[in-house]
Image (cartoon, rainbow, N blue to C red; front, side, top):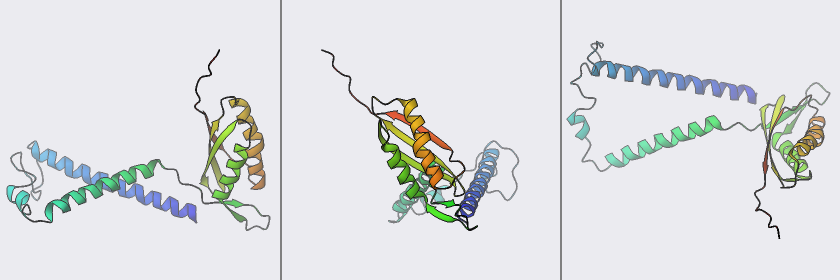
Length: 199
């Protein structure tokens, strides 16, 4: 159900974005055509290069009203905030809320995604050479995916740490949740440390 709702929201988001883009393209193209003196429909408000988008009376109509400039600035600020929020939402991956586990009774059981993330983080941090771990579950509840970021101590071996993470923490999580597979993207980063002084 969650996946269906998320897919529907994503589809509506794309449809609204496409409609808004087409509308802006049509209006911009018509204004450009009128400005270049090309043929435009008779009902179009701007019909030639000498027409202006806003006449003097339209520009100065509300100028002396106390509420005008705060309303304009507030409206534009709100548009900027909404545009930035939407832009950041496109780059944010949705966190998986729950994982469906095969319980053997044909119905399955639900495991909180955050609980599985916490267990994975703790087991990864218990590995030798790992200073800190962050886990994010994405994907569908029937086919979860993991993104893991490991902060390694200066002495840690990246290859060895990755092998232990795969053979221990990820294997335990996969087995305990009854998953056939748990595709994982792992990013390794070393702790910043100063150079040792040699005497």
